[in-house]
Amino acid sequence: MSRTTRGARGSGDLAVSVRQALDTASGRVTFDDPDFVDIGGRVHRFRHRGRDLVAKLRPLGAARSEQELAAESARRLGGLTVDGFGAVEVCVPELVPLPGQGAALVSPHLGRRLSAGNGANGLSVPVVADLLVALLDRGVEASGCVPRNMFRRVGRTVLIDWEDALLVPAGATPNELTLMKWDIAWSDLLGHDLKLRDRIPTSLPGEQAVLDDFETVLASWFARGAPHVDVRRYGIEVTLASELPLTRAGSASAAALGHLAEDVLPAKLGVFHTVLTAHLREQRGEDAYASLLGQLDALATGSRPAAFPPDLAALRRAWVLALFSAAESIPLAGAVSLEQLAERIGQLARVSGWDAACERAMVAEEIAGRLADVVLTVLRIEELDLLLRGSCAQGVLGLGSDIDFELSSAAFPCGHRPAEDLLIEALTCLGLEAEGSAARPVEHDLVNADGNASRDLHEWFELRRPGSAVHDPGWATTVLTPPSAETIGRPSQYEEQGREYTAKYLWFESRAALARLASTGSGTARMPVTVERQLALLPQVIGAEEAAELRDLVHATFALRETADPAHPAGGQADAEITRLAARLNLFRQRLGLPGPQNP
Image (cartoon, rainbow, N blue to C red; front, side):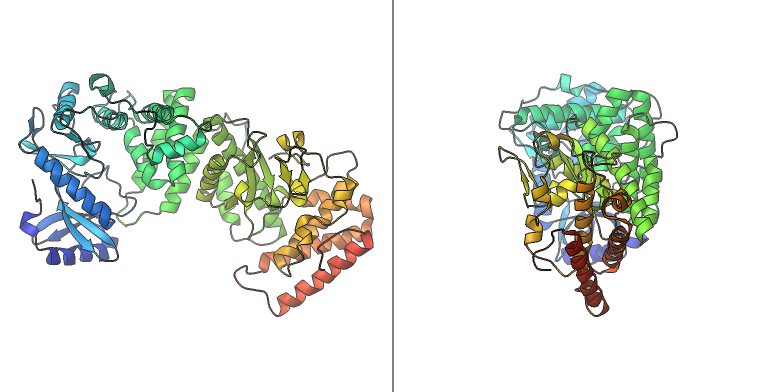
C-alpha cells in the first residue's frame, strides 16, 4: 500500500483540510476505540473529499524520516503473506508540511486497532513469532509491529507507525529492546507471557551499546560508570516485570498503562513508573500490583472525555499520588494520606500570611519526606540523607519560596543530582516548587580538613532532616566541624558581599540574626531550627524586650517579602518600608553586637 490516501490527494487541498481539522480540534472526533488515548493531542481525525482520514503531527524532519522508513519497508515487504494475518501491508502516509507547526503524516482511518476488542482471535504464539521473523527475513526490524499499530482488514493486515523501524540485513536477529517490546505488547494481547525472547534469537549488545532515552535516565540512577550492557539488561528486566500481563481475567493492561505513562509523566517520572511498578510487583505481590493498575486504569479512562485536551496537570498529579501511595511502607494507623496532604497544599496555594506559611512548611515537609523515602527505597539508595534547607527547614514557607533540599551523603557531598531531579519532578506534579543541590549557596564558611566538603554558615544553621525539631545535618556532622564562636561572630562570606535593599534580603537578615542568637543561646544542646522555636528561646537569651523587637522584625520582614512582587523592583511605599526595616535591623545588631552585611 504505497499511498493510502490515493483518492484524497492534492497536497495543497489536503493541507487546507488538515489545518481546518487542527483549528477545530476542540470539537474532537472520537476514534471508536475505548483504549485510545492521545495525551499530547498529536492525532486528529477529519474528512477530506469523502474520505475518513487521520493526521499525526510531527516535526518536519521526523515526519520525513518516518515516511521514508515506511516507504522502504513497504518495498521490502511487498507481496508478503503470513498465516493468521493474510497479506501484510505497510501504510505509507502522505506528508503534508505545515509551516510553523512541522508536518502532518496523513493516513486513512482504518477502524479499530488489533489491540481493541477481539483482536487475539485465531492468533497463537507460533503465528505471532512467524510474523515477526518474516519481517526480519525481509530486512525489516519493526519494534512497532505490535497490536496497537495493526489493523485487520478482509484478507490482510495493515501496519502503521514506522518511526522506530530499523532497516537491517535480511534474516538479521533483532536487538534486545525490539524483542522486549514485542514480548510485552503481544503478551498483553493474548493475556499471558508468550516468552518470545525464548523463541526468537536476539543480538546481544556490545559494551559500548548506545543507550536510548529511557536507559540514559536509568543509568543516571546506577552506580557511577556502570557498563552500558548492565544498564540495558536491568532496563529490560524491570520493564518486563512492570508490563508483562497479570494472569487474572479482567485485569487492567500493564503494557498500555506503561506506554501511556510515557506521555502523561515528565521524562524521569516516566522511567520511575516502570521501576516502581516492577518493585511493587516483586515486593508486595500480584494483588498490590493489580490494585495499582486498577487505579491507574481508572485515571486513564477518565482522561478520555468528549472535550479535548484532557487536564494533563490534574492527570499527572493523580498518577503521581497513586504511584507513591502504593509504594509507601505500611502507614501508621491514622496517618494522613498523601492525597489529603496534596489537597491541603492545593488549598494553601494562594493563602498568604504567617499562619498559612507555617502550615504550608509543615505539610510540604511531610510530603517531601514521604516522596523521598519512596524514591530512595525503590532506587535502592537508602544511604542518602534527605536534608532540608531554607524557609521550609525553618518552618515558614512563604508564597514566593521553594522547598530547598538535598539528597546527599559522604559519598555524594554535593548531592545525588539525578535522584534530586526525580524528586523535584514529583513535587512539581503536586504543586510544590523545589530546588536541590544545584541551588545550594556557593559560599564556604565551613570547610573540612580535606577541602572536599563545605557549607555556607546560614545554610549550616538551617540543616535538618524531616521530622527533627533541632539542628540535624545527618551525615554532614561526620565531615564538618560546627562553626566556632569566632566564625559565628563575624560577617559570613555572603554578608561580606553587601546588603541588597530588597524584601527578600531583609527576610534573610532577620532570620540570620535570629539563628546566630539561637545557636549561641542553645549552649551544648542542639539548636532549634524552626523560626517559631528559635523565637521561643529568645527571652531567656536576650531578655523579653529585645526578644519582642526581633520577633516584630522577623514578622515585619516576612510580611514585606510575602507581598513583594519579585518580577518588579520595589518603589514608593515599599522602598520606604525596606529602608525603615533595614535601619531597625542595624540598630538591633549594634545593641547586641551581632555581625551583618558589610554595607548596612
